[in-house]
Structures are given as structure tokens and as C-alpha cells.
Image (cartoon, rainbow, N blue to C red):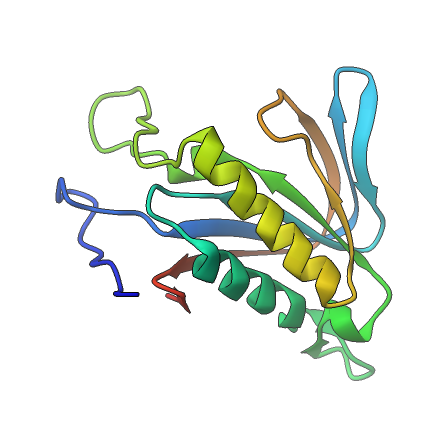
Length: 168
């Protein structure tokens, strides 16, 4: 598996990576209409954008990174603990808009985002791998119009990019 070349966003050949926006939360809930589809207390809200060309290796790497991410305080108040060491959960929500290009005009372009048929299994793989690591995982509803309520803890927000089976 070769690493895709990343170029400046002004280069027409730019290929975005799989992207996750990770927020440490006190709680988070996803609803579709009046129905709650996912809800967690203390943990991580992860918005995942899948790009065209992303694969199983990218999903596996992202899941490993998320599971071991040391963003929770230890006894000394340092961010030295991951969810693997604490009670907590992960709420994973697919969000193709993370792959938007705003290079031209005022309307974002989403052509770099994977098709729903390609993205859904990869988001599902991230969820499956997180569960296999022993974490409690809730999800949004793929392809639905969702509302997300959260109480950000910090705030503490990270962006993780993965391509070619490696974190950038």
C-alpha cells in the first residue's frame, strides 16, 4: 500500500486524508428527529470524514490512535490517560463535510469525500475496532440529518489525519 501524495490545497491533485475531529466531552448525544440514536457520558465525540481512496488500513490506524489517545488527566492533572485506562465511552459520527474544499467560490465542494457506499463500511470498521479494544462505543446514524448536543470538556479538540495506513 503506497502513501498518497499530499499537496497544497491549491494544487488540483490534492487528495485529503481520512480525517477525525476529536472532542473530549463531559457528555454528548446524537438525535435524528425526536429519536436519540447515540449518547455517552464522559469520553470522546469523534466526527469522522472518509475520503475517496481511504481503506481498511486507514480505519484500523485511526481506531488504534483513538483508543490510545492520552487526553485525560492523571492524578497530577497531566493528560496521561486514555479511555482504555478509564471509565468512559466514544461517540462516533460520520461527517463527510470534514473533507470539504473551500478553495474556489463560496460553496464548499465535497468531491473528495468518499461515496456513502465506500464510507459507511470504513466508519463501521472504526467503530468495530474500537469495540474490539474493549471500549464502549455509540454511533450516530450514517447518512441521516443529525443533531448533536455536547458539553465539551476543556475545551479539548484535536484533528487527526490518516492516509496510507499512517497518521500524518
